[in-house]
Each structure stands twice: as C-alpha cells, then as structure tokens.
Amino acid sequence: MLSNERTTCLVVGGGPAGLVLGLLIARAGVEVTVLEKHPDFLRDFRGDTVHASTLTLLDELGLGQRFAALPQQRINRMQVQLDGCSAQVADLRRLPGAHQHIAMVPQWDFLDLVADAAEAEPTFTLRRNAEVVDLLYDGGRVAGVRYRDRTDGTEHEIRAGLTVGCDGRASAVRAAAGMRPRSFGVPMDVWWFRLPRHAGDPDGGVGRVGTGEFAVMIDRGDYWQCAYLIRKGSDAEMRAAGIAQFRARITGLLPWLGDRADALTSFDDVKLLDVKLDRLRRWYRDGLLLIGDAAHAMSPVGGVGINLAVADAVATARLLAPALRSGGIVPPALLRRVQLRRWWATALIQGAQRAAHRGILGERVAQPTASSPQSQGASGMFDRDGDGTPAAAGSEVPFPLSMLQRFPALQGVPARLIAIGPLPEHAPEWARRSPQPAA
Image (cartoon, rainbow, N blue to C red):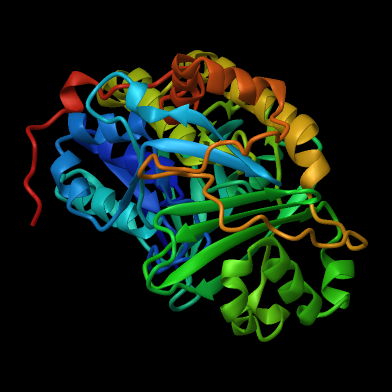
C-alpha cells in the first residue's frame, strides 16, 4: 500500500542537525516533517559532548534551563597525559559568554529535549520508524522521498518543496542522489565497549595517551563508555588474538580498570566504529541539500562533529526559511549560499583533525603486534575540577604543550577552537523564545 503526503520542508534524519533544523523551520511558521528510521533515540555509542556554542544556542531558543536540569558533567579544563607526564592544554574558563564549559549529556537526552520543543510547534511533524529507500523527482529536481514504515513494511511517498539530508555519514539520501564525498585517509578505527563504573572512580571524561595506545572513557553514571583506538583495518587481526589479550591491554594502559576488565567476556561486547573523514564537493542539487555528517563526516578528534552539524542546521534555517515561507521552492543558488557559509569552517576543522591524525595520533594507535605499555596511573584528559597532575619533574613535554604551560593565557585558544569553533551560529530572531523552566 502506497500513500502520498506533502510537506514544505522534508528533513531526513532525526539526529542533532535534523531535529534542530526541524525546530527552527517550524518556528518560522513553515510546515516541516522529520523522518527518523528508528523508533526512539536510545542508541548507544553516540557523542555526548554539548559544546559552549550549542549551549548558547539553547539559551537563545529558550531551552537553556531545561537542558541545565538534565543529569550532566561539566568540563572546564582539558588535560592530556603522556607516559610520565601530564599537561593542561585548554582552559575553558577563559571563554567569553555565559558557558565556560562543555556539558557531557547522553545524546538521547539532548535529542528528546529538542524533539519535545519542536513537537510543541503546530507546523512540525516527526515520523519515527520511517526509513528512506529512494528519492522522488519532478523532472530533474528532487521532489521528496519514498520511505518504508519499519513497523509494518508498507511504503509511502512524501513530496516536498525542499528535502534536506541529515542522515549521517552513511546517508541513504546521499547514496540515492549518487553524490560521492571526497575521502581523506585516517589512521585509526575505534573500539567501543562498556566497563562498570565504581564509587571512587574519576568523574566526567577520562583519557590516557601511552606509547602506541590511546583510550578515552566517558562517564555514563553506572558504567564507562570506553573508546580504544586501533590501527585502521586491523579489527579482524586484533580480534583473532582473543579477548584475553585485549583485557591485558586495557589493564596495562589503565590499571585502575583492571579489577573489572573481566566484564568483557567476548568480542561481542566490543563494537567497531569505522572512522571516516570525508566531505562532499557540492552539498546540494536542485531540491536537495545535505548538511552535517551527510555532507562532511568528521573524525572523533575534538568531539566537534555534533556541534558542527548543529551550526549547519542553524545557518540552513536562517538562510532558507524566508524562501520556504514564500512558496516552498528554494533555488539552487540559495542552497549554494548554505555551503559557502559553512564550507570554510568545516574545511578548517577537518584540516586540523588531519594534522592531529598525522602528528599526534598516528604514533599512538594500537596495532596487532604492539605490546601494551605500563600505565603511569589514572589520567585525566578532561580535568573537570582543575586539579590535574602537573608535568613530572624531568619529564619531556612536547614543545607546543610546554608553551601552553609557560603561557597559560594561550590555553584559551584551543578552548575556543574546541568549545565554540571558528564560526558559531546564532538563532535568528524569529526562532528565539523566553526561557522555558524545567518540567
């Protein structure tokens, strides 16, 4: 059974970019439908960082108080620890504005908050369990999508004046349009897994950089969500060595987790994230625009992907809402303005990530033949309280890190690049609301 629907703006993907765009377009008084292929947002191993630029946006949208009421950790300093020494690299207390921190909140809580706010708008519709299978065309122009209802298998068509693909790095919209991104090589993939969190463990995010190894742990309350970097393409060979060897690696790198490494009973508990870094040369075609990871997949370095996607959504809404209000057909020249606005910030961040891959992470990504170094103890990449261990006497600190220690004011530069970014976007006046108290 095939049913036909119509909307002015169709957004594919209910992630951060898709839901923020849907909310803003609805507040412009434009009919907007968001298609999300899952029944809810409860999917693990997603980014948790909400940076200062996005926190400012939530204030502008009247959602800051509701967000602040969510369970979260707040990070105001960042520390990197190598074998034998540690160094603070960013001091977020030097940031301008009301938010001098990064909030660590499960992404599903953030998405639920934005979705609830959007569903309060009369022109907003969220369809869950809706998986896009193809694009619809009117001549050479994209005119909507065909999607499958995953609850009963029926297919439906929905036509739109503009379709926006926000469906991530494996974008079905991008594939259906035949748009192929330029891919930049990356040296690593990431293994994600859980370990129990005990009373007395460090708070917030914890990281460890060793010779040939790099790991980050994210506090989820009663468990740690852990990321362990491995050499690109080495997943099968490392798994073949057995889970016992991996547990030994974790124990050697982070001895304070050794008493619970046995929670990894098999490699069924370890999920692979295929790290990608790519960017479309052109983000649009007639009737179609791609933003967020669908247009430019980001590396995990810096944790900036979510906030960059949100900034894309804000710029898109500000530039396109007037045309959508006046008739729903957005000319390609206007879609091009969105790319021109967001391209240089994206390219700049991806360039910095590529430099980090080559100069910092490339030497510290686990390999099948690498032996696990003995850790110097627990270490904090993210130092929430600001009492991190200083560089050990006589230890060798790389020159850039030594300059950050010698001139602490310089720590405001990486803080701004990470927490605010090179081109923060602000909510247009028509989308702003008075603060909404927490429920």
